[in-house]
Image 1 (cartoon, rainbow, N blue to C red):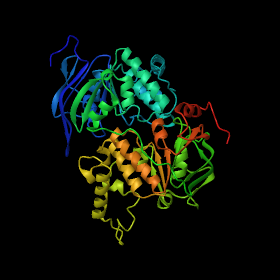
Image 2: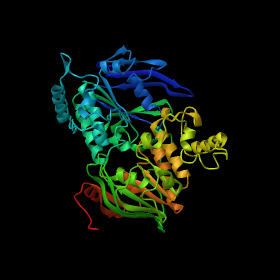
Image 3: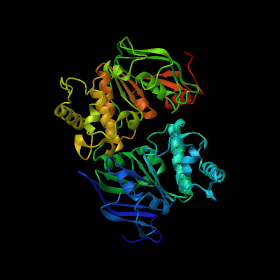
Image 4: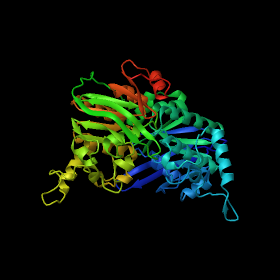
Length: 513
């Protein structure tokens, strides 16, 4: 290709990257202009993260070359990438939980004078940057105590602190609330206006349409094409990405609620830092055959509410019963065997044992059932493999080596599909689904939404917790809005508007119970 007068900020030419059993990137060429926001779109496992990891020096490609400003460069590791001004925010953040925000930002490039740490100077630079780009953070907060939104802003500040010019954002909005997403889009526009070049991986078409200048599409490891955003449509992008037309609407019959499945009364759960209560005397019911959704801005107690119900955190006061059985203080396995399934918010922390195989992760809560274990206590490996293969096929879980793939090596979206397959296939009486489609592409979301509606139509109860307003509106039969640890409103998705829901979520409006 002929070089224009101004060379591209970054070019990846004919990149091929192989892993056992899979060609993750098959002869891919990607060109990033200076000061542009360039989206990288593709299904789960299409090779987007792999391609960006090659650019960031985490992987070495078997073929192809990388050029910066028209000159070939070697990126042997992330330190090389940093030296070339390339920074990356990973889908699963790389922060030290017990460090403060400030310490995380300066980690590895600490300003020293005569062997002493010059933190004041660093703090000033961080605060200036956060001011300039609208990145609100508390430099002294410990990472383990802050919202995912602030963790992400910390990651972006980490790049800016290092004066990176090329910013890679891997699925940056997967963990954010609608408000935070708008803020992030604004931040990205500011960065591009300052001359930074942004590559952002996404499969949310509306975000790409609203913020990107151009978009390159990958499908199953191959390059499909690059389009200008102002000359394309979401339907065309989804066709390029999935290879077929995708339905964006959820089809479901009106719900026919039956008996109460889950009864939560005056539930109070302490916050993680235990200095106050995250859930304050919450009461609600989920009946058979309905999807009740808890909506709200991240950090208003939804996480702790689910921890209390699923047994991940102890309950301070109040009760919860499942089909009339008191499970307030029951251990997790008892909740599980009593008919509760849980698709957790943090798939790495609570959803998978990352160093186990896919098949072992699929039977995590059932390995002790007669189907999978002999009388003498030995696992029936063949039964486990057959069961895993059934679910892998049914839910289209893609991985390099099928059931023996190590969970850690799978793409985020496929890890999520594996968890969903496991939890739904157990045939629960109550399915708790927290952010079930986070990080999934339109094709997979369409499938998962159908599965959740199917669970409801089988006369089971579904408690959905989602930060995606579209998902809340599309799936739920009743919406409960949480604000600062309390339920402040109950809305009917058939009549409610997103504006009205937004007011409840921001605490500007509450229904007197």
